[in-house]
Structure formats: structure tokens, C-alpha cells
Amino acid sequence: MIHTSSMPLTKEQIAQRIARELKHGFYVNLGIGIPTLVANYIPAGVDVVLQSENGLLGMGPFPTPDKVDPDLINAGKQTITTINGSVFFDSAASFGMIRAGKVDLTVLGAMEVSDQGDIANWKIPGKMVKGMGGAMDLVASARNIIVAMLHTNPKGESKLLSHCALPLTGVRCVKKVVTDLAVLDITPDGFLLRERAPGVTVEEIQAKTAGKLLVPSEVPEIVL
Amino acid sequence: MNKVVRGPDEAIYDIHDGATLMLGGFGLCGIPENCIAALVKKGIKNLTCISNNAGVDDFGIGLLLQQKQVRKMISSYVGENAEFERQLLSGELLVDLIPQGTLATRCLAAGYGMPAIYTPAGVGTEVAEGKEVRNFKGKDYLLEYAFDADFAIVKAWKGDTMGNLVFHATARNFNPLMAMAGKITIAEVEELVPVGSLDPDSIHTPGIYVHRIFEGKNYQKRIEQLTISQP
Image 1 (cartoon, chains in turn purple, brown):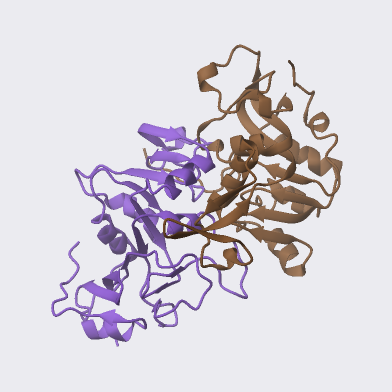
Image 2 (spheres, helix red, strand yellow):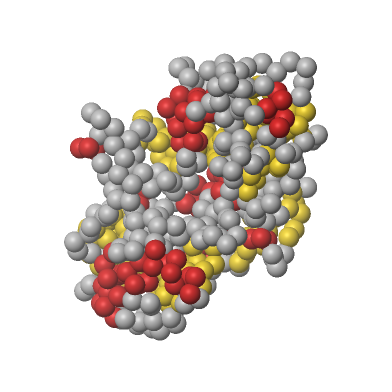
């Protein structure tokens, strides 16, 4: 039941909220979809370096038409640019720095997240399987993983579960989930509701969260 | 020492039906366009291709798929190709999907003379099925084997006649790793330069790994996702 004055976050606002988790000096890997939008909201004065797992540290904005280089793309295969301090390397070095825990924060999308921090985002049985790309490497090694996704699927069913039904990408790895309705930390005891979207009630979030949800006495609204 | 061959047809002359090939590139970025065209022309079949992606319908490895030359793909992501999907669903094509970092590091291991690696990628997922798991310092890792490829085909920006290679920007990707990993490595380059003209400090792939080299022609360098900022 959606409250008439409730204001679920747009995808851009989910990205904007996640951008507030960026700390000065972070190396950050942003996945495809909502996570890519996080780059548009990096707070002023926060200096972060974006890693693209095909082999680049220091990803710059999209090029102007005269600066397009087919040899310079990101992991989403979009044309991009370098910035001062950018460096190229091969894909083994790229996943080496990921595996070694050098990337401070990974943001990625998900189809399902469990209250234990499991994530499923690569395969729907019975549908064409495109592959996991770098997602399994990232979630197996990243020190801090934030998932950006909508709280429910198009049928209105919760994507925050006690156990993922879809094939897993990684186990017990997600630390935080930011949805259109809420910000939740993953704790040993389940999802901990930290913030709610403006006007969205705790009851609505409870109704749309199938996994175990811990609700503190105070749940502030998300401030963007 | 001179490893220069006349062109792609000579470079791939002994690639046979049933061979296992590594093909460099990420998406359509840094793919060996000339050698792929020569493989299509030669018409050899039943290939196993190790490549991060499988091209698009009318370019890259997609051209080999169109001619039904590929029996098996070993890739991390294969999303952009309708003919690929058709062959997969009909059972004509086998696909082994593996994590991208595992793919890269299995190439690295082959080039470094190591039989296997341990990686946490895929622990607790279906990727781990049937694999040895070992715990180091409280964390589980999967044993993954080095690749064993008959040929590696890579694309570089510059190369000299001894086979030393330099890559450009993110077209580097899997190319130097696969260059190290083939029993026979074929490099096509945009610019073939005389030996001595590359800065030894700036060479990415030492020529010891490269067996044949030629200057490619007519690179299309197709872009999959053109994204631009307004000036």
C-alpha cells in the first residue's frame, strides 16, 4: 500500500544517496545501471578515483565528439576519457587489485539480496544467460559493497529476501543496500533499517521486505 | 630475429579444425580484426574460443559464429549477439561462462608457467561446482587451472619485427595476457616498426612470447556504446 504523500527515490536519487558514502581518497568501482549514475553526484571536495575493470584507473567523463577514441572504453563498453593521473593496465592486473582489496568501494546492481548479504545478479534460470562478467570477482573480494536497486520487482515482490532464490553471484558480501524506499545495512541479525525515503512509512518498508528486518525506534528520512 | 609474416593468411596457416584459440579484446575493443577475417575465409571449424566476449552479430567473433565455425566459447559475458543465443539454445554451441578475473588470471598463469591459481571468485555459487576449495587464513578459494591454448591471437597498437608489443589505452585488456599464454602467439599490429624503435621501458609484451607478427589493414574499430558529452 503506497501512502499518497510517499516519495520513493528515483534512480538518480538512489545514486545521489550512494554518492554520500564516498570518502575522500577512495578508489571506487561502479557497476552498470544505477551505479554508473553515482559518478554524477560525487560531493564537492571528495576526491575519488574510479576503477573500470577492463583496465583503467582514473575514469573521466564521456568524451566530446572530437575526443572519441574507440580504444578507450569502460567496463560497460561506453566511450570515456582519461583524467590527470589515469593509468591503463591489463585485465589480470585490474582483477589483481580488486582481489587484493585495494578497491575501497564497489557499487553494483542486484536482482536479489538476502538478509545475510548474499547477492544474485547474473542469471535467471530459463532465460538467456549472458554471463557474470566481473561481478563474481568483485563481490568475492571487495572490502565494501553497496547494492543499488529497486526494493521490489515489477510484480511488486520483495527483492530483499531471507534467502536468494536465483543463482548466487556471491555469499555474505553485501554491506549496504540503497533502494527507492530505504537505506539498509546488512548486519549479522538481518537488514537494519537506517533511513527511509521521504514520506515512506516503516510499515510500507516492512511489508515490502521479505527478509528479516530490524527497525530501530528512530528511522530518519533520507536527506539528499 | 625476425618474426614478420606477410599477413593474416600466413599468420594463421596452420590453425586447424578443432583448435583451441585465445582471442584478445574486450567487447569489440582491441580485437584482432584481420585474423578473424582470415579465419572466416579459411573456414576451419569446431573451434574452441577463449575470449572475454563473443562479438556482435556481424563483427568480431560473431563473424565466426555466423559461419558456424565455433563449437565452444569460454567467456565471461556474451550478451550482445542474437546468433550466439540461437546456437546456444539449439545446442550447436557449448558455452562455459567463467568470472572475468578468473579468465584473465588463468591466462596469466599459463604465461607465467603456473598450472593453477586460487581465487575467491565464485565460491558458494554454481561456478564452484566440482572444484577443489581450499581455505587460506579463514577464507575459501577455488582452484582454477591455467588455460591450455594451441594459439593466441592478439591485437596491439605497435609492434617491432622481433615481436615486442605495445598496446593503446583500454585496448590492452586481455591482449598481453593471452599473448603470453598461447603455444603459438600471433600478433597483428596497427603499426609495425623497425627493431630498436620501441623504448625498452615501455614495451608491454616481450617478444619472447610472440611467434608471428604482421601489420594489419583497414581497422574498423567499431564502437559498441557511443557515449558523448556535449562540448
